[in-house]
Amino acid sequence: MSDNSGTRGLWGGLRVAVLALLWGSTFLWTELALRGLSPLQVTLARCVLGALVLVVACYATGHRLPRGVAWRHIVVAAFFCNALPFALFSVGQQTVDSGLAGVLNATTPLWSIALGLALGSERGLRPVRLAGLLLGFTGTIVIFAPWQTTGATGWGALAILGAAASYAVAFTYMGRTLVRRGTPTISLSAAQLVAASGLTALAVPIGGLESIDPGPTVLVAAVVLSVFCTAITFHLTYRIINDEGATNAAVVGYLLPVVSVLLGAVVLGEDLSVRGCWGWPWCWWVWG
Image (cartoon, rainbow, N blue to C red; front, top):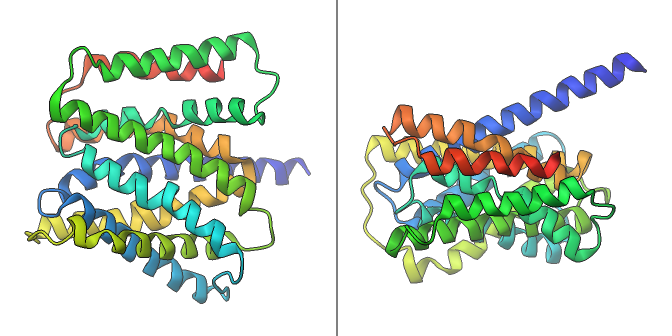
């Protein structure tokens, strides 16, 4: 029994580490893809290529896409977990560095806890954890610094905060309506990206018809973003929601800034923001 528990714990830790690495690199690849594609084109590529990978994996493992009323919940989840946040991140990163985008995305657990309190699913909140929640939001304000950040950059940061909040809504909704209901997670994740592809395609006439510059760097970034940072990452997230709950899935977001800030500094030459580095650790107090 203890050996099995130790193995599950090791596998769970490895899964979280891989997810944090892949999810944290999302902001680098998004930044590179935006050099030749519009935000909506990046979003559409992520959804379509990611859906293709997961649908192939689904059928290759002997599973099928869900049928019936489950699709109503899948479409709602696809909007809040994929179509909307993917678009908001792409819009935000037009003016916000990839490292700071990762730091702002780390507010997802804060939104998740706040949503749980509002819905009554988070009970018995200890005073130290409540103080951590307040400090976490204070840290977010310090990172955002609306008194210093104006214009396009300010709106970009606000868009990324909106994407982080959208993830929190989606994780909670997925945990309540989709997981642990007899449908394999590979089927759910594949179906959700298919739905997200349809939702994003509806917006193409609005902002997806711009000319593109498909240079090698842009193409590689779009493929890596779609396959590794969308398909694989999204399926791992679904597995964590299924096995450990929506809040624990959101907590992975705390690890992202380490990856995003380092990649942004090393690969893109971005400055290490004193504001971002100061504000992000406050988020950890939520789990004190």
